[in-house]
Length: 78
Image: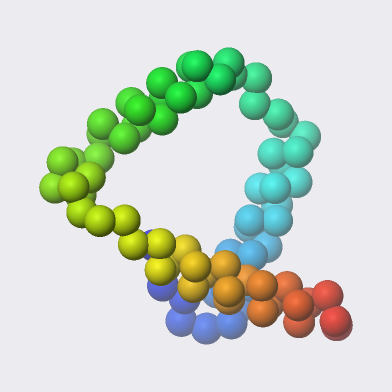
């Protein structure tokens, strides 16, 4: 996971995510559900077993969501 050193890096990441979301809305995925599930399984199998056996720690994702929500709140009030 990326480590952000300053507000500029966080803003850059937020901007990139917003651009991706805009692109994604214009380019919907046309893959069948069963194929998508199979692809996820294939990707999971690429993860080394030592990492698959570790407990999942969503702390980093939760922290990132909190940072983005604070930035978005500040951005919307500007």
